[in-house]
Length: 109
Image 1 (cartoon, rainbow, N blue to C red):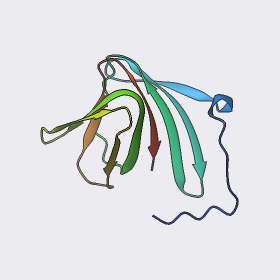
Image 2 (image 1 turned 90 degrees about the vertical axis):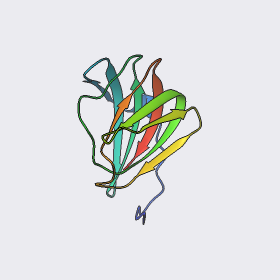
Image 3 (image 1 turned 60 degrees about the vertical axis):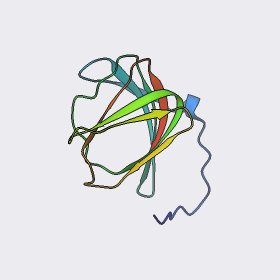
Image 4 (image 1 turned 30 degrees about the vertical axis):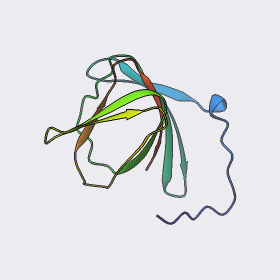
């Protein structure tokens, strides 16, 4: 990854607007910032959240709080706890996010 941002950027997340996105179950509260082709999202997944689609986009996901489970289309599940990072490439393994008790994550893509 090459990062081409002409000036440093400090993000104060409480000042950023957010949206609520329903899942197949539960919801995610998302805040998003885009800078020079890089998207940063802070997401709060509700307890019992289940994504409603398979994702093929590449991400770096840092679990800030809670537990996030990423189910892969071929059947494997990755369990991420607070402090863990998940990296998947574009058009890599299709994946869906879900939670049991909720999670707060930072997503970079």
